Length: 249
Ligand SMILES: [Fe+2]
Image (cartoon, rainbow, N blue to C red; front, top):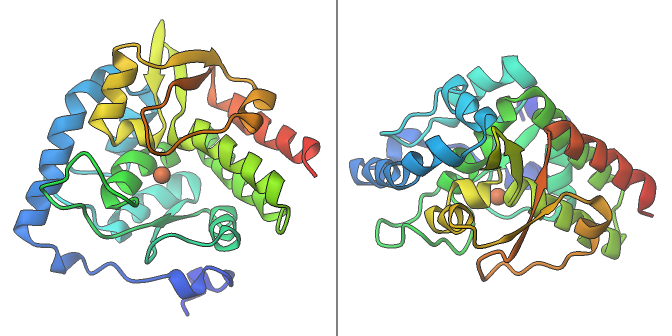
């Protein structure tokens, strides 16, 4: 166990190493193709914090990221580390990692024949979709706070379900009002050309972010999102997470 992960317990069995040298040229080409599909739309419709973070953490358009290299640029900014894991984590391990500013990151990449769909998150969803936002100080603090608060809710099934909705409508499918329009910041929108196009073409109903409504809003993972919640700033979801701690339980 390295000293960097010494404070993790529940998450330890899920930590792996990324064997970056093992990625094939074909896999790097698949990454490049995925970026090529999403990026033109994102330059126009992603929030500015995402686009800034993409540059700041040294993400490349032509090759799969080396997580250690990404983290070496990210950690000095916000303390976050993109930490390789084997796949889905149990809730306690997931919250534990977020509260330690470690984002559980998968290392596999979807097949070139299924660019738009993955049954589980892959490195494109996790790194291209999520990690650039972790370079933004307020979003970084929000995500830490989300993990800390979630970690206090062990065994409280209904509250954990409500917390999963807060995650869904922010980290995964969040949008923000910026520069006179709706911009995307959730990874489910950033890393899916289809979901992002759906927003661009005004598919979903956009409601003002409201914590009470979000906590009770059931979502479907198998269809395009019919309703999204727009924030005015990332301070809003930071404060909402603290408010969730006060209201739940
Ligand atoms: Fe995700």
